[in-house]
Length: 333
Image (tube, rainbow, N blue to C red; front, side, top):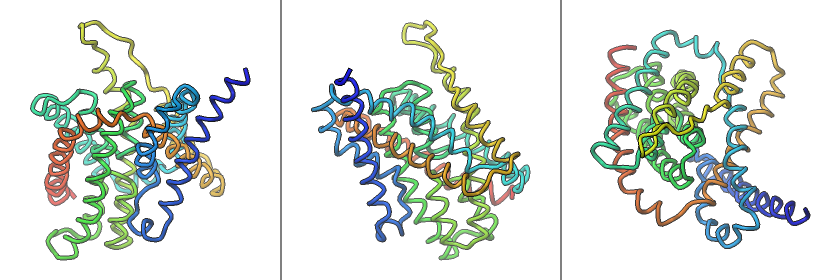
């Protein structure tokens, strides 16, 4: 019995140390100005520490797997306190329709291009597509949990959306400042919210332009986040077919319903702001723990093996988001 508790303790300590190091680095002045999320740093630090985990896997595996799966779901559920139905309604029908168009098109094209043309693993293709279409690392983690895919696949997808999300965060304000994007502040907010990957990317890019662009971008981004719920319900169904052609067990992502429930609760009930802030912090902390645990489980060889094709797919999707998103906003907003 004592040995069992020791295994859980060792694993949680390892995950916690990686996570705290991620928060420390993310809050360094030089890093904070780049708006690099602790989520991203957590998975990178986890990868670096993965040899340590593999050497002591028998004595800490249960807690690491628990953090990557269960704490992830708790973090996604509590993430609902970042979204309200009122804020979504404020951008009107156009914001909702354009968000749906972006999510559907990127998911379909990403899967088609990745599997049919690049011969990429099906799960990696849909994970990269989900991260690009919805909300970056959080979408990848949620989809990875729903599909029950191998941890290294999620890490590959996270790495790709992080790279191109950061590129977009710096590129958009630079090009806009040069007068090369013929959009006003509100339209630029739509553009950023519809096409950038991470919430941190949206905050950084929108804030670099002006407060109006940032506010609109955040609202549109939150609509994409909310679309995570139907995507988590629909996509796993198409992955329920096994290689032998038999139906394998379909895992229903119940945490998606809880996430939606939290959004509704946050919209309908006047919860003290202090409590909401605490729950948002707890959500972020759970997601960092999950990302750190995911990084610890990475198989470096498989990451390198599939990384090049995933990079090509991510670059193609990024190009589609840049040019296709601009055309949507220019002609429809």
